[in-house]
Length: 97
Image 1 (cartoon, one colour):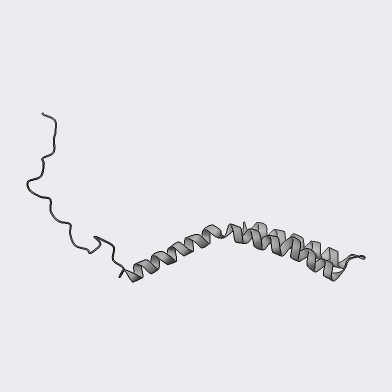
Image 2 (cartoon, rainbow, N blue to C red):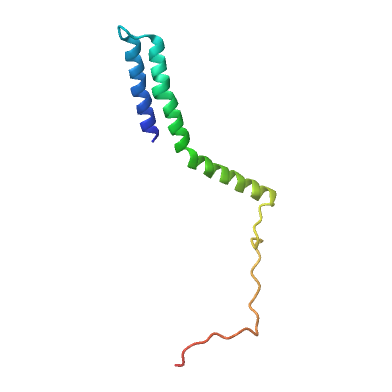
C-alpha cells in the first residue's frame, strides 16, 4: 500500500507542477493542489491503514511491560518437574483381549 501512496503523491506533485507552470496558473495554485489533492488525503489514508500495526505495537509494549513488572515468570514456569500422579487414582478402562 505504501507504493500506492507514493504513486499518488507523485501524480499530485506533477499536477501541482503543471498548475504552477501553466500560463494562467500560479505557484500558490500548484502548492494548494499538491497539498489538498496529495498530502492531506495520503496522510489520512496512511494513518487509517497503519492502525492495525499501531495496535499490535501497543499490545506488544503492554505485554513487555507486564512481563517486566511480574518478574518475567509465568505460572508453572519455574523449571521444576510437575508433581507425580497419585497412586490411588482410577485405573484406565480398556477392552478385554
